[in-house]
Image (cartoon, rainbow over all chains, first blue to last red; front, side, top):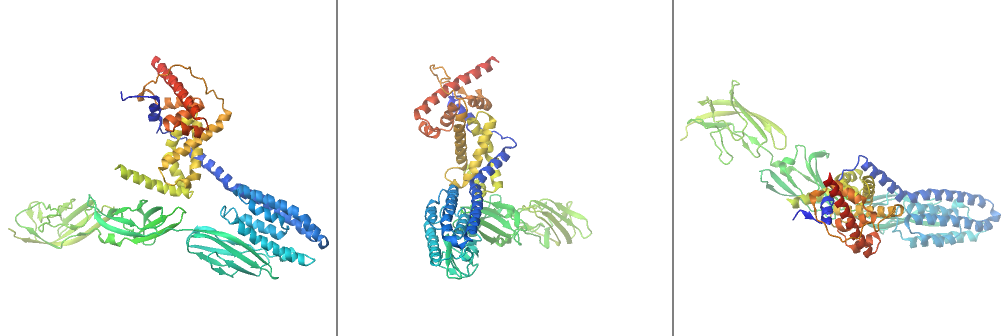
Length: 447
Length: 192
């Protein structure tokens, strides 16, 4: 029998798609768990950095104290190295924990002399690293810094006395943003110590010598920005930062051909010619740019019908989004659709038929000139028309747009002359209308 | 008509998906509201009680929100979410395995096994959930993965980190266990 199932089918059919309503606090539980996971993911690294930063400061303080007695400088320096080396090693370890990389950076530096300058550089690097995680070219960085250190070392070995920490050039800068959508404007702020000039290279072949340059990255890409700071005595130091510019999609929209729906409403297809997008969202804006309710869509190419366009809708807006979260917007004015606006026009003269009352019914395909009725482009949702004599008497009333006035009042012919009409109602989209005017009635014979 | 419905659903998904990728909690809540009932229905099969099922479901959603960027759009979003839920349930099972007492083996008399045929109307959803939740953990995992999810024993072996033969024998034991239980339920109902 079709009823009978084996156990697998039984469980599959009954429980396979079964739904159970979760408890009241279920969503809150999700949020809580989510926050904990997010905290653990990102802040473990930062937490360690503050801790290590504190150690570094302590180490630097110790070193400064030791440096104050020049006679034992050489020896002191040697003693300093293990201290700072340790710190650096642990720095590296914390970084490693954050991003599982960084070991290659550690080795060469440990062999260098421990100086406050280097420590600060390390600090700067650490701040940068969590931001640009895995793609930073570790090798070039090493060589740059190693070279500087060698420079420093040479200079220090020349004289009997070390240049005091005060005059060492510490190259340092921050970028207003290190990642974003093209075109990306970045403000670079030079925070170097003991530098009197700087040379920037933006990674695009362009450079600058301003203190705090502003650069606009127009094309998407990954750029290595470097800055070389120069000190008063000819010392230089270099540092770098990676800027990631994501490609932005290009939004492009066109209004397609209009067509008529089965119910007679007019519609139009909105064509999406965007490039590089992954999803589009559409809505309408008023003349002052604020969003207008009533219509929105997430389709790739939606259709828009006349009755979805509210009175204050002035433009169609399409926002295209790509996988990097970058957007682009395109706008189109709605004039073309609005031009086919709803109209209701009444004649100013009509000639009724002497032969007798007709009831006034007509159809759009069979217009009657012996009936007073409006011409309209779209049938309203609600309609009412009244005819008054000059005295103010109500002569005729209808709620059917396809019924006009045949000139008769209760089977009798009314007098020729001027009559007043009032017409009110509501369009399909909800806007109301109220029109009035006068019409001259003429009696003619028609055979 | 069905085609249009699917298309619309994809667009609704796309909007919510985009929001979730950006980490917007309104989009996340929308996703949760739309699918938490279905997901809880899945998790309840893997848990021993509804509270545990809800725990698993919550963890599953956290995983979904943290990994939504990985969803490349191949296949349906719902299927992807279900897989994450099942993975979460399995991880949970692995954790619990260490703490819970197991009497997976030999709970069942080794009799000749005749496949009973059932009528769908014989049991309610709740009764079936109940039975499956009382199953020994190992049986429940294998039964769910094979009978309901449709995985092959080779795949189940990988997922549960057991031998393929173990999966097969666990499965046949699971069936026997279930059959006995279901028969018992019918008998007690019959007796009134």
